[in-house]
Length: 581
Ligand code: LR7
Ligand code: MN
Image 1 (cartoon, protein in one colour):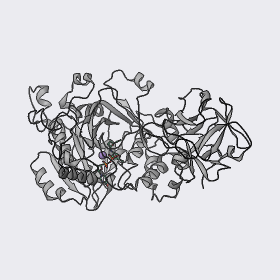
Image 2 (cartoon, protein in one colour; image 1 turned 135 degrees about the vertical axis):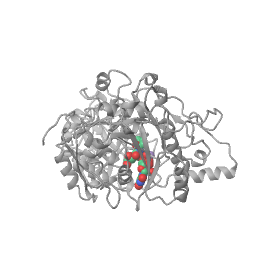
Image 3 (cartoon, protein in one colour; image 1 turned 120 degrees about the horizontal axis):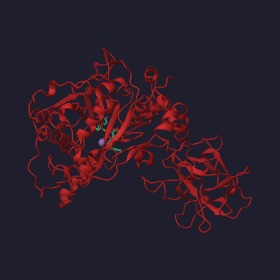
Image 4 (cartoon, helix red, strand yellow; image 1 turned 135 degrees about the horizontal axis):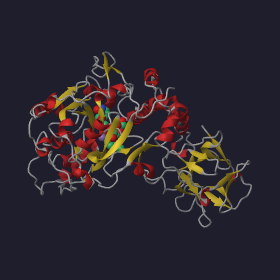
């Protein structure tokens, strides 16, 4: 495969762009554009001539109404309504319907302000507004509630400098809700710069976004979810970075808006960056030391291996060059990692800008079916991960059976762009991820010879941390995931579906195995995490000089569990790995 440097940009970009009958991008029109030489069109800015102060140039499309500190949820403060029994029921209903407290959202101003939650140094950054590229903000929605959708729209209009915002394109992904039909059209017809386009069948977020993008006129595409609120100054850093580096795809810091109180939980400290685990689940990480060292200022953008997916800005012609999205992906999921891999492997960079903050309402749980996510992830793995797709399949054996459609075109794209391989990505962009050894016979379900068909099973107590929770024995299910363990060359029993991975540990006092963070890259294995898996299946814990034994019941939780006991030749102390049932 032809290698190309990260900053190597092609001289000629053939982009084939147009709207198909279905409305989304297909390759139909041939054009040549030189990204590096291309200048930002100025026509848009000609209205502003002569001596105009920077203050004037940063005026938003609409000004926010005067601040009323007593209004509900103003400045992103949490709200708890005092409600009658009947009102409480309505609130409950809204939560069941949207997985967001829409009853409350409907009572909070669509124009509320947010408290300042950025690094104070961000305030000092200066922008030459006339030289920044313009942007179109694309917001796809499916059955979104009125107030969360329109708060997103108003928030963009009221925080984005008029000179920078070409338009907001709303994309209705074939919603069923009445309020999103005529009432929405009527409402937005009164707003400057807001357009609406509708899909004629459910497209899923990938094709819905592309349908929106296909009618944009700005230099930069900025994608947002339909339940966001933008922090003051969110847009400029994204556009500045893209002006400086047209092959950078830049994400804002994603702040949490609580689904129940609508509190805006920003954080002016160092933001987090994106990673993934070997189930291909997106993960958050602290900024690694080497990246902190590379940056010269806390206001410099931060390289990130992956993005969450919903919120980012990309130069439109660069997005086209990179092959937009994989239109074979349905509904939800997978596109975020696919795009992240593609950006890095094909010569771009993916970054989080610490001065750009946008709030996002994280729902209580998924409000619609996400069953297509698996096939989408398989597409990403099949196109971008080379031999490392096996590491993914080992942890999701059922993914191998998933019908993922045809990816020939995407593989051709990869070849055409001369993209680097996944090994390069791991080594250079995500060196902190542990690459499992997955030696034959040393990974999969960890089964006991005495207690038949029971497997090591671990569910971390908390979705954000691998530690905490207890290792138990549970009937083997053969699905990988929480029953997937790997015995490493250095004698660790790793639970590395998650990143950072967890390692089984024991001590001389308690008999249970518990999970600790595995050592960091380059560090030795801690004594309490070291095991020897002997020929006869004995699993010997070196520090305690005991053997792991399957117990039928443990005193506290009552479930069977592995335990450290004096070594003997009982079959309950004999273990073996099995890849599949
Ligand atoms: O069929 C659909 N059609 C749509 O138009 C399904 C969804 N959508 C719209 C939807 O209305 C919303 O505006 O697409 C957008 C994203 O859908 P969400 O809000 O249900 O997704 P999410 O916020 O739960 O999930 C994250 O991962 C997704 C993977 O496919 C997308 O990339 C989302 O954009 C992404 N959201 C974010 O990155 C915000 C921060 C969340 C985190 C971490
Ligand atoms: Mn979302």
